[in-house]
Amino acid sequence: MIETASKLSRSDVERIVRSIVAERLGQSAPAASAPVADGKPNPLVVNISARHVHLSEEHVEQLFGPGHQLEPVKDLYQDGYYAAKETVAVVGPRRRMLPEVRVLGPCRGASQVELAFTDGISLGIDLPVRISGNIEGTPGCLLVGPHGSVELEQGVIRAMRHVHMGPADLDWYGVKAGDSMHLRIESAGCTTVLEDVVVRAGENIKLEVHLDTDEGNAIHLDGATNVELVKPEPCKCHG
Image 1 (tube, rainbow, N blue to C red):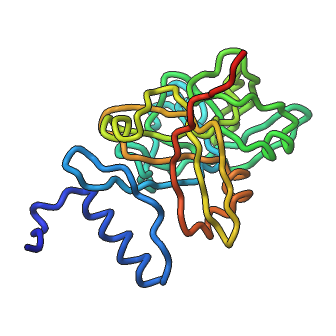
Image 2 (cartoon, helix red, strand yellow):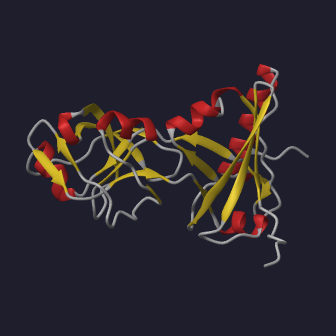
């Protein structure tokens, strides 16, 4: 019996659409091997997270004017998160600058800037690799907006590659928040494995891997025909 639309969950619809698109393009759909509680598979999505800025409400007003609120222009894959219309200039040491870096919403308690390795080279900043939100002791920068500027004492990082998981995904893969996984990517006849993909867990979260621009380009993610998350085997080394 064919399921009616009223009985299909959002994950079911996404899975069906991805399969149809892959079939029309004559490609294999990216691996989707994580079933949710009802036994249906969760799609594994791998996205490139380009350079961006998270701002506190205070810094939004300093950069864009009193009472200003971020204007969403594009929803991100995770529900409730979006790319805003607003952009800022990120200025590093010796006045090196990245203009028009996108702001992502909603606002956070503390502002931070997430860049790729090559962005750090351009700005003259030695970027530490951190999980988003872990900014203690990191470098700072100058943010410049149309209304004013903000001098960040810390908060400039290269985001550690990571995978967002909901409770069902954690159960399926047998992992917990903070664990590391491997991401296997088949692309243009070449297979690449990225290690140290950190698990980030939360309720109402869709299965999604985030890589930065440099990593996505290095593995030719746009040409990927198959992606797979792999739980590393326990180390059998003896002291």
